[in-house]
Image 1 (cartoon, one colour):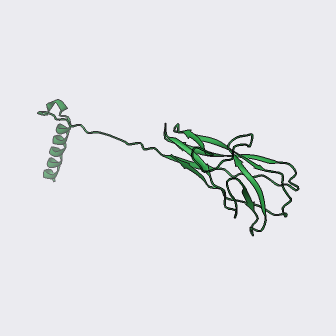
Image 2 (tube, one colour; image 1 turned 90 degrees about the vertical axis):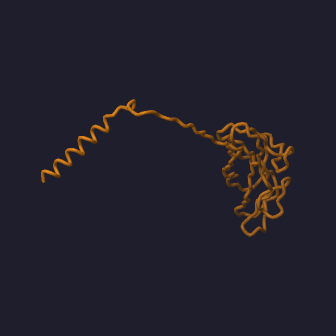
Length: 168
């Protein structure tokens, strides 16, 4: 038992002595350097909010509503945002359509880049898309929608799914 106690005491004393050696007591030191890097590539993301024209009876005046798409791009990255014609059969950029569930009835509408509803928003770069430059934060872009005066469609719910695309 004395031998075990003596060994434990000796180990404790030697450990304490080893820990108390100052760094300057070593014979020398060497250094090495290493490089740290990160490549930030041009990148963008896009999100969109729904556009709801609400409920109406007779469409005897324009129904105007807005929504927004949000683009987040790395700083100084140029981008364009395009909107397709939508999912309703027969819909085109110039003549967008909302369709009822069976696709048997349609309501005309369109999407614009300006509050005056004069610049249709489409998919042709340099012609009818919205351009911008990324700043590293989300940039909201207003989409102006209009259902123009038109012949009365049947009472129903009319929808379309529009795809917004950011190119960079």
